[in-house]
Amino acid sequence: MIESPYFFGANVRKSNGLTPQRSHPSLVDLRSEPNVNSRFPGMTICLLPESGTTILKSAHREDLPRGEPRRELVIPKVLVLMAARNGASWIAAQIESILNQAEVDVSLVISDDGSTDDTGAELRPYVDDPRICWLSPLRPTGSAAQNFLWTVGGTPSNGHSHVAFSDQDDLWLSDKLRRACRVLEVSGAAGYSCPVSAFWEDGREALLRQSSRLTQSDFLFEGAGQGCTFVLTAKVYDRMRAFLLQCPVQTDAVRYHDWLIYALSRSWKLQWAFDTVPMLKYRQHATNDTGARGSLRAVTKRLTLILDGWYLTQLRTIAAICREAAPEDQVITEWIRLLSQPNDLRRRLRVARFFIRGGRRRMSDNMVLVISALAGWV
Image (cartoon, rainbow, N blue to C red):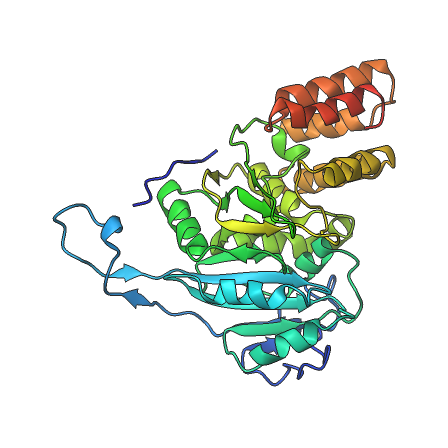
């Protein structure tokens, strides 16, 4: 048992010199699935070989109570989805950290969103690895979130027990997936996230913790930490995938897929497990999509997005999707009604109070939203 605490709460085409994977036996025509062509016209599904049951005959000593005989353990089968674009400097190291996960069977799907650097050259050594499948949108999706959502649409769980999300530039600790699967099994939660150890090229490091204090409404304006730590049960992943394929118009505006995943889980009243132990190294560099939450660059970017009205658009987009997923939820309905009111002093005070009462993160993080609400920027 894990003793550390945790909380509940396409078309496939030639890209960068890679051989097209259309002939791969794990690929089947996506047109046979309903609702797919509305979002992914003419693409091909990535269907990795169906997973059977893998048995581990020697358990770790720490997994067995004292004096209990060794027993057979089922190894989790984890499907990992990676969104890639211009990641030549880091992607090979991240792939290795994924393929070398301990005591899990890993399948890796990489979606290269029109890279113009040497990403293809870095991927070429893996072209014959049966654990890996490559996809590439016909047109650039425009963001990491849309790349992930495109990949989700074309990739069912297909017999895997869990589905994880990966950035192209991190480094996973060898026990990351095994631990996440075990936490999900013990807790009965639908999703998992954990802290990360941010690191910079100059040698600096910082632990980015996550708050586990769930509220009735936190999912409506914030996610569950870094999406590169997320692991879902296959049952919940397939439910989300089916839902997302039915509402392509709403999801086209989503900027953060991880916020969307967390919001849908919470809309459906599912549990989320917040681990307290960092299980990956979160690389920081000039081209991070967001970067470390506490960094000056991340705070500045957040404020800029709020001032531009982008954050308000995201709030309304996530809320609309959540209402579609849970039309009877009164908290979601009230939040949508509040966001639609004229931006007068009364509305500003109510939105600020909503952030204060519903915020899951520490107050210093939440104050950015509270001040923005009082100023009328949200």
